[in-house]
Amino acid sequence: MKYVYLAIFSIVIFWETDSFQQIYEFHNYWQYLANIVLVGYFAFLLEISIPVKKIFNLGSTKTNI
Image (cartoon, rainbow, N blue to C red; front, side, top):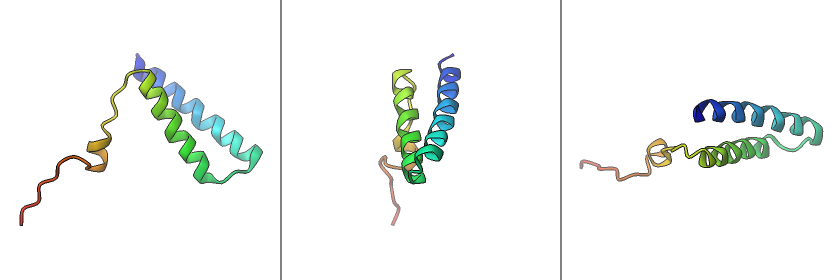
């Protein structure tokens, strides 16, 4: 159920920040940054694990030479 809540929060966040961007005319960069931060924050509150290391390959990478 927490994934459904996160999806609903994400949709509302994207919708609201798009409305704010149209009203206040701030740059798209700030809109996308706010979206990422807010979705990540709500995922944290809902105790949903986001594997950041796996997404960006920040873990231990073995290179064969």
